[in-house]
Length: 239
Image (cartoon, rainbow, N blue to C red; front, side):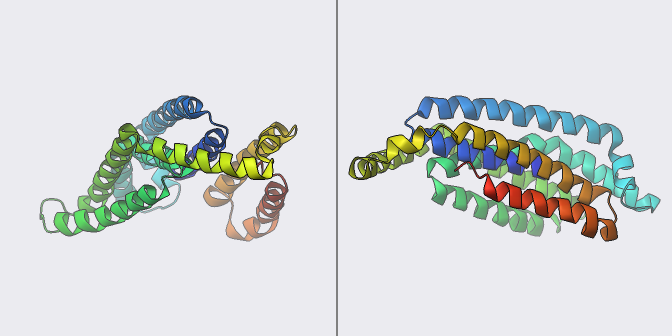
């Protein structure tokens, strides 16, 4: 319910940034990122409200043991307080990838893994933490990784990558004469719209398959639908 929308935003921002940087519209990339962050924060707060209000009931959809439901509900209520940080990671990392700052984005991913290991090693040795160490590790890692992503964005070094990539693209365009025609293809907007619809349908079906449909049914009806959507998406990639 949380990771899939954030991952979709990551991919969308990355594609949006890459296309507009290629077109020399750096200011449009910045505006798009700011609006994407508004959507990300709004969605995170919305989901946080739902999980705080119905955390135990949501966990109860997957397990029956009261003790497990109680622990899972508390863990869900703790982690949802940090969904803004999680969304910030996905959205900002998507911008950095799209801008060509892929090395730092990769380093940022390694830091996230290291944080999960490092915080876990420290917190498990604190007796008072108990099993809360697991969830606290995740939340602290999200905060550290999100701050690193934002600092990289505010530093503006990704803009240097933009200028370098744009210069390379223009040099290639001068040699091939294909740059302008690619940017002005009349059917690009139609393909992007179709791909957006496909992505939304795929997300809905995937959520249904993972959350409510028994395995034996998902292998038939839902599985067939997902296969169709995947093939459909491949045929209508907008780039």
